Amino acid sequence: MKPTLKLGMVGAGFVANFHARALTQVRGVEIAGITAKAKAEELAKMVKANGLGDGVVYANVAEMAKHVDAIAIFTPNFTRLEIVEEIADAVKKGAALKGLICEKPLARNMKEARRLIALVNEAKLKTAYFENQIFMKPIRTQLQQLAPQQKTMGPLVLARSAEEHGGPHEGWFWDPTRQGGGVLLDMGCHSIAVGWYCLTPLGKPINFLQPITISADCSLLKWGQKPWREKLLQKMGVDYSKTPAEDFVTGMVTFKNPETGQIVKAQFTDSWMFEKQGLRLYMDGMGPGYAFEVNTLNSSLQVFIGDVAAEAVADAETALEKATASRGLLAVQHNEADLYGYTDENEDAAAAFLAGRDGFLPLSYGLEITKLCMAGYMAAERKKTIDLTDPAVQKELETYVPLIQQGRGAEVLYGK
Image (cartoon, rainbow, N blue to C red; front, side, top):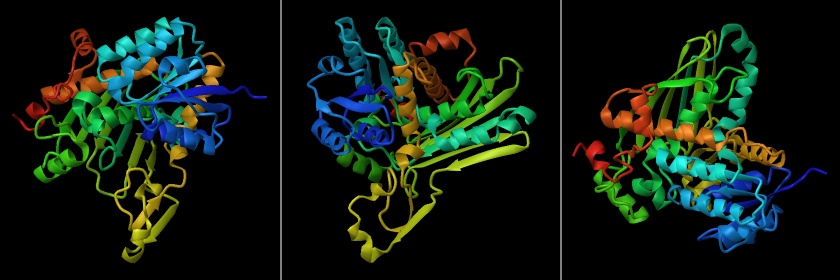
């Protein structure tokens, strides 16, 4: 009989529920515990209703750590370090944890990320960094399908990745001092990671390609306009006239193959001002004589809802995450959790922890993505391409905190 991983979740919000949906499709994992400041009982009810485990609600992380095999952190960015400190302390006091999962991004800056890694290493925990887009079946399948072309013609030389929607669900996402920035840290971390992954030659480690430069342009295009600032303040309690964050970013990371010297590039574009059906993940790549393209708004299922029937739809997001409309021609994804890679990353983490090893993406990989995000902010602030091979730049990134993260976004986004 296949062993079962007893998973404890910290957090019961949107992403925790999304992972719970993914786990309905994963064998060998049960949600044994939940601890959260809000909605823990609601998540526990969903867990039990779907046969996902006992879903026992615990008062705190320390108590839950005594009853689970692994802990997944699905809480806001500004809480991560404190939670890892509690987990590390629980291990010191005897909690027999097999592993730790951390949802992207790993941290708000390099100082936090380094401290988090140090705590995990001291506790001798196996880890999994949850970057779902690398686990997307369309991404994995195109690599398999194009393997002969890669071997014959050479690896991809250009990857482009975008994640775009109309804006996050919760107020803390919009607050750059709590989230750590705007759309670059929130979603650029996805796009940078999947671009790096797609460009990596077959059979090579995930960090094989060496990042050598990054450029980026952060802008506030929609949510800085007065009517939208007022709407954001009213709905989310965040004042973008005082502490704005970017709602659009585009940039380029240049990588070098250390064996061949070949230069390859990953372009990323992310926004909170996308005005189509809802969340769109778009990736494509070009190699010598071949290419691929992924667009999650191209669904095999479409429905049409006219004005007279629109009132029957209580929740537009039953069709698509971050859906912006409940009428007209709608793209419907019947299994978003699987499409976006959540199912496969959970399977990977469970198998890894039960085997006593790190997941495919350990937290050390999340550290590298944090560094690239910070370098992106630095490039945008200084309006120049950042040399990632410069020892002085590498040292500065260790303590760098973007102006937007400091709450001084008006200086770079409004030109004040």
